Length: 430
Image 1 (tube, rainbow, N blue to C red):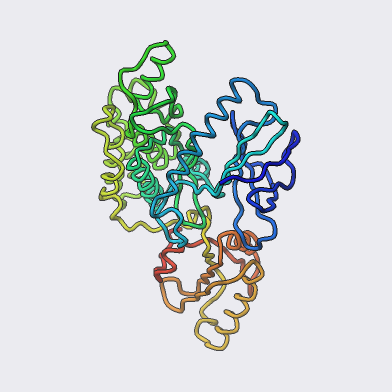
Image 2: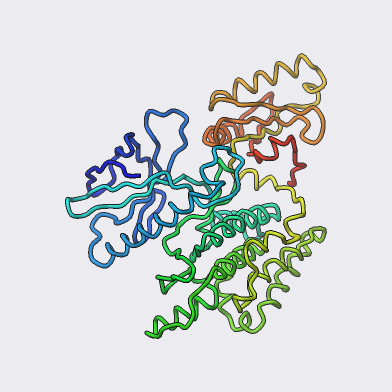
């Protein structure tokens, strides 16, 4: 779709018009060599979720950089537009399968008559796996978090690869959490290509680059032509490294470039898992270890395909989230702890009064779709509040955490919408 053009100065204006609507540019989220990303919100539509404006060709860009930006825009647009056709893409239900970031539309703005700037209006996502790795403080992510991320990314890759696409730049910064859809999604298709039609020599990011891509890059730098093109197997290599980093809590860039890794990567993976097994010997981590090993074969033909990897026994284990997981991953459902004690739960009149008080307070941050306060375990005394969207839930979580209720400090976390809808209450690990 196309939007209306508008004139921008050296800095983005506070408002812009596109798709017949007025959008407020709220903040810059980040920038790269050929694009900048801004948080935007549609004016005049209360309750609408914010979006992400990816603007290619920053002001003042000319020559080769301008050509690269235009090329990157066309590649990413083509990939995202084709990938929106999947049966799970465009599904109005919030409980949908993981998928690439949703593309809302495309438009062009002009800094000057001869300098167009291409823009993609995208779904705004939340925390990235890169940020989750920072929060893990070298302890590693929980098995629940790793399992959730692995399944979501593999489902997205299975779809991409079935459509003939190679992402070619899978890394922690390009995997983000969608609060509305309760899953991890892939972003940044600037290096993606159709398998068998690789039009980019230098693919993947250092530290997550498959051996065959590394060889191809070295040959290209030497001015030599590679005999073979990279395949979808490069994405599985990258995911294997990401999952190993999530488990270990360590960046592995230097490890995977070492001679020891090249000589016997399997032994290094065994060592990482052996050193972590002492922390919680009850967790059957060997299923994850074997899954990661199947993704990290030097020979791409031996690497497990995404669709087959989803059949790993690792995904049959019912892990429970840690409380830190439910603080870091927003959803439309808020869970309040330390609110009701046994006296309220055992007196029906007091119970109903306090539930009404809590609901009234929670409605200050947005419409409450439902509210649940279990009287029995699991979940006894906890308050579950379902909001119409994750934006309201996030606002409530921020402002309710640390508040006093009946002389007690309130603890507010998020809660998986899918589990809440099924009536399943985790016995959350602390």
